[in-house]
Image (tube, rainbow, N blue to C red):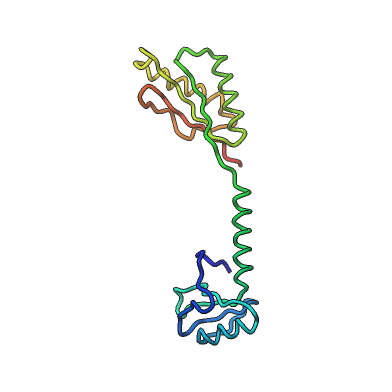
Length: 175
């Protein structure tokens, strides 16, 4: 049974008149007053925890609250340890007159980033009269995406913002 909220009401803090009680082994003890339920919990040297306050009647469980909190903290720590933070790396192309080989080298660097699980932001900086030809930049971005197509997909297509054109590449989803 998963208990959703972090701060749970325990022992004497439970102000309900009548509660449904679940024993430490998971069996139902039925409806009883909060005082009787607390007495049963103290008999077993455990805590009475209000796990479903919005139910009618509210549900309490007899458990070791300190042990439960420790287990939850351990699960959260394990979940944080296993998650991977995706970074965004940037590849800059200055000007539209880049040679094919230079573009391939930048694409190979982007492939390395994508293989490591990172996203890649490809930026073209337009200079002077190049601003009048955004279609050449779009074509260049498409060539770049074609070089990386074996390991990456276009997450956001090429878009012009001021003097720069951006495109985002992400790792291909695993099949």
